[in-house]
Figure 1: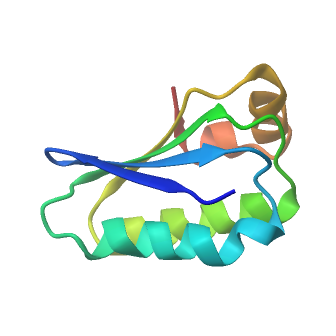
Figure 2: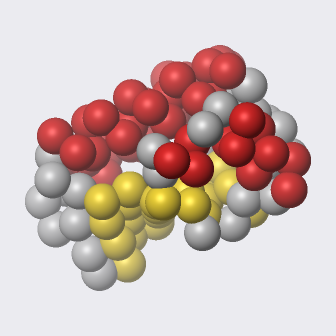
Length: 101
């Protein structure tokens, strides 16, 4: 899976397709870096609509993105989470750390 970056006005989206695991680390970092470095972007969304599964390394990547987005003054939200993905996020208490829509 290679994340897809979409920019609409001040919102940047990282669209994930397939399993979100360690194999995606390099591509996810490149996609997030592109949005973090774009000064026109004030809000970043990670779109999970097409993600059936994520593992602990994906949780780590999300935490790192949250930290970097905060340092860059950008809002971050996780969107379109399937039930299986939402369950993993809830078990990891990410509902307390992230905006999840």
